[in-house]
Image (cartoon, rainbow, N blue to C red; front, side, top):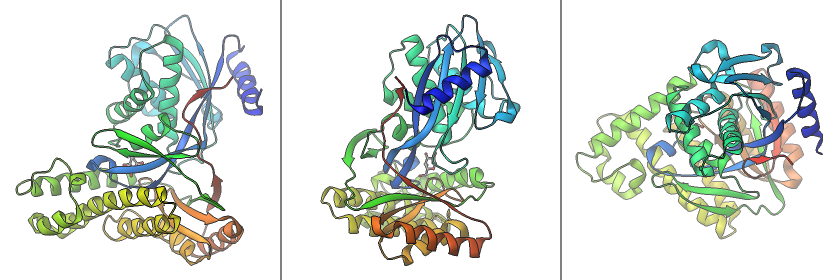
Length: 391
Ligand code: GLA
């Protein structure tokens, strides 16, 4: 038995009295390699699941009670709820994520006969933007399917997770995070067309290089409201374009068509936002081709261009992420570096040659601390599989 499995099963017994009938599970976190803020614009994304994520132990009950405990928030103790009262509640903290998924199953006609005891232990850095909440959502859906035998695919688990996040937790996210987690495949990134949900796995062969994540440790504040603001700006720009061009989403536009018609958009800010959505989508398609051709240098350059566009046109970076990326670009052996996820804080993702990893961490780390006043954290990560039972 793995050390982690033993640890969480033991803790489950301590917290909930005994561990009889309990089962251990895992769902990954995710990092997006390229294709940022394209998923709600009908564009492409290219994320992958990580080997870090959320571990959980769950046990079915014979009543409708729910008892939750997180080893990441031990001070909160056991938080209780009932399947008969599934509503969002600020005081219920992180348990709104598993509760939201239970609510979503019921909304979709899959009635839950019994409650559960659930213990979680995540090793995704907190608030890092590596999708710890989507990881919890997919994990919960996976457990419910395992318990009650619902006829849902992993793709359905992603959609249910997003539905719960949008409608229960009122965060207007796209499908990328839940999809990357539910559909994760070791050593592969997922090239997903968010307009149709058609997807393709692309092997990430980084000979002599690794994916390094730098976590800015910037606490997210205004982030969520700015996220919705960007969505609205894109929706307005699309509506303006649709007066002249027959498109369903910004992702339908190629660069030439966009340049030809962009003047129809009545604000410079919205032109910039739409330009990012259009060019980032095209970049993502090119990046996947580059990777397939083993042209990792081109892939890296496209990552860098993605960051510039997110910084200048989409304006979702901020001094912390810009510092991490701009310092990374100075280090020899860095193939590409960009912010990843929603932005406004969170992480950057870089592809770094093996021999440069130590100097990358020390150089970028030192410059970051000097400029920002506190330290960043670095993680050399691996691409892992989707959710599983820990047997
Ligand atoms: C967050 C959202 C995703 C996606 C990214 C930006 O992670 O949850 O749906 O929009 O931001 O690419």
